[in-house]
Image 1 (spheres, rainbow, N blue to C red):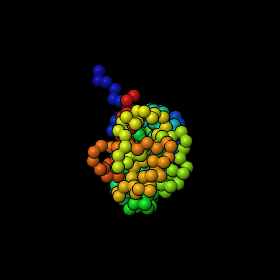
Image 2 (cartoon, rainbow, N blue to C red):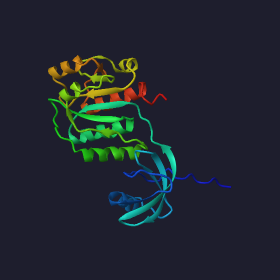
Image 3 (tube, one colour):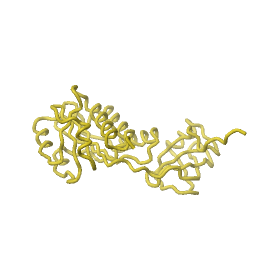
Image 4 (cartoon, rainbow, N blue to C red):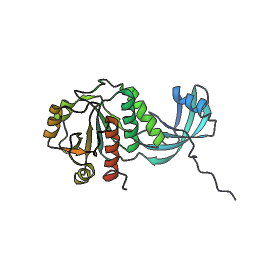
Length: 249
């Protein structure tokens, strides 16, 4: 007798919604989500959809009605509760749009809890469309099956970031002028942490001095080569996750 197919199938579309979900709850999806389900995925009544609400977790839902402008679904079962991601903040200097989009996407995939864009003297970009940034994060979370969306804050000047630094959080400073080995520093300073990476032109001397003067700051090196801003942010985040984050588990 053939095995019963898994439900929901792995191919089921996966979407984040703004409504808190529960067993038996009905939900109507419209706008771009309805277009995606009906026109791109071509779902039909009875098909499965996986929904996440960033509150309770990930739910299996079944399509009740599938129209061109609206799709009605019914939540059937909780698949996974909202995950607990490591207490890690990425403080990334603002980069040009396409490069910062890459940082946002990969930070989400790697498991970052919070993203704090930073404005430094050598930043080429000085503005960030937060709605667009959140859309990039949602798309990345849907793709990588993450159940907790990273929080993203409005850009803040470096001086303000340092002035308001949280006493119990370690700040790892990716300094192109050198520092201690990143993996060893990560292992030696466990607990709530943040990573600060620079812009296209790097930090200037005054900024570097101000960062190093912060008691919680630890300068780290990311190897013998000078990395682009997006590469530094992604590489160091991956190394932290692999050393003391949730990858070893």
